Length: 217
Image (cartoon, rainbow, N blue to C red; front, side, top):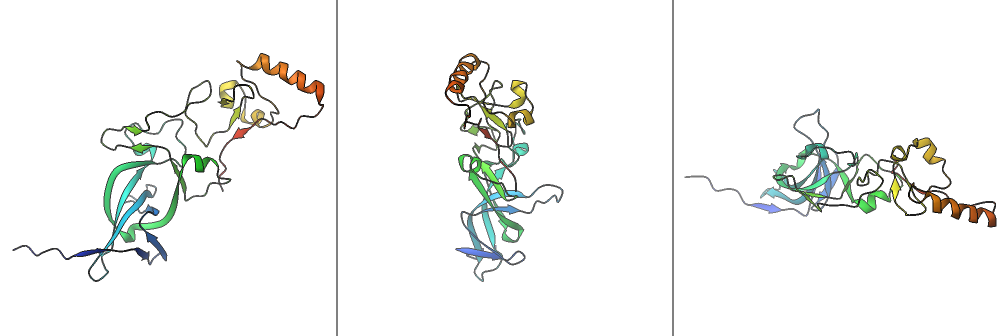
């Protein structure tokens, strides 16, 4: 006769002793990979369970996938700290947790003044069996019509408000950083006219071209 399974109970929290950190359901964590040459796995804790004695603690997790782990692989617009919330659930030993991390929304991540080693962002949910993404479309920018990669510097046209990669407008990053004004090719004629009018009323302009790029700490 098979031995019945010992009942398990749900814990409100658990302290991983080797790092002296306490974790709860809902926390995002870095977990030790089976292959030490690979980066830590990113997961969200769904539930923490232990046996009746409070030992043999397991965490039920929902994995985040890195772009290179997805069926389509990493693409140009994927940020270096981008992860996808997958439909892949798992159970792991709590002692494989290495650290707590933060998975920001895309909007929150782009507003960070500095990005730490434990900061990530997610803008897609990912189906691990079909390779499908939700949402399946996001806003695109520039002449190349690519989604925004927050690692890349971009400049904004003062006419149409679209964002452009310096390389796509035949400009170096250094040149883009020195810009006081920028009008894209489509807006340049009208933009030059506006600039001439503004210079006729003021010798000094306070307007600087906006750039967007995340900075790592």
